[in-house]
Image (cartoon, rainbow over all chains, first blue to last red; front, side, top):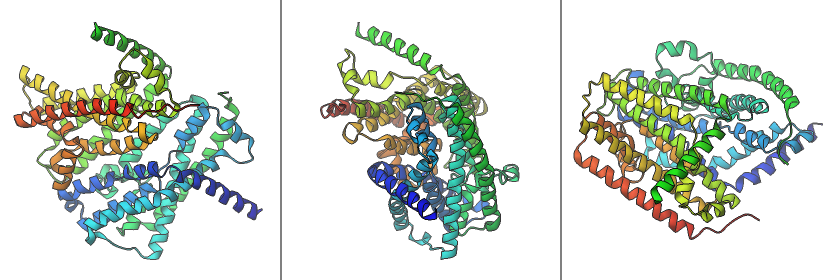
Length: 263
Length: 264
């Protein structure tokens, strides 16, 4: 039983990895498009804005480069693939197989992240060449922990998008809802500014939402900025526990609604 | 006359694609909320920067809002016209349907750049204009004819530069076939147009004015708004816009020579 599922997982990953390797250039470009944190860092340090929030230049730089890494490995696009597959009727053959199609998408994402890894390293390397004093190496425990929390952040986003993707069964075009969700993710997750710098009236409620755990928490962890480790991981797991049953429910409801389209 | 023919064709494009987009009515409402939230988010980010400082690269908060307004208008234009059309080029080339476009008795660049329209971006344009009107009020800008003309000229030039950037990148699809993500790279670079050019370090400033002239797109029109733009900057922007438009045209004609139809 366990052997069989390991076999399934490795086959799925292998297939998707070779699939993704075909689009190396595209993935490289995509990695480049994630450099917004560096521009933001430039604004912060160039105007000495970090002094007001009591973070040194070095620590802020480390925060933003960690945010870059976390973002690279938690990008989710399942709704766009699913929307196309469902509009074109491509998911009909997947539904016959004894495997939930979302496992296929999950494997696609993980394979894409593996393909993306070297490109992200190159970009970070270029950054460190120009700013060698910022280089640091976290200890193995922290590294492992931030790897886990980045993966949890990826899972939260994957579940949120999968729930939205399931809305395709009702509305056919779910990507506009995804764009709506992307706005708070962009501004509140800490990609553009660390959550510590937010005004008090936002900070009072933001930690209940899933957003700061998407980028801010793993990035703080990786960069060595102060953060509540056990609280952060707990919140991440809690959000997964909330979202997963919701996804299962909406999937089983939606699948009844599905009418095959296309030829 | 040729021009009136193009005008007539364009009105047809406009109505047909508007009709097909209006089929998804809930989408338009969701897009309205998205555009609204996006503007609130950008102003929120700007207010974080200004929490403990009064100037960002020489701009105070009220002045920086002008840049935000112009960015929102340009972003709306991108979402209404450039994005839906120019991402279509990828499909045209991949599926070989560019053949049908080339066979039509109309200019292919015109057809490819203006065929579709996405009405949700229009809301962003309206929001941007409202924000600009508010900025004119809080910055106590006096409006006269020459001010209006200069504003329209510089914003027009920005639109031309923006269009050319999108079009140049989309044209490279003829060689690389898949460049969806190249437009993503451009999009992320355009993101910095929300902030005044002077708030970046010197090296980035050079990069964003020489290699990718994003700096010109929002900063110069905003300076015109505040009547602090030097005349040479305005002339420079006009020259750059012309160069970009011209080269996008030449590049398209050049790329077409390499187009080999796909499909079965």
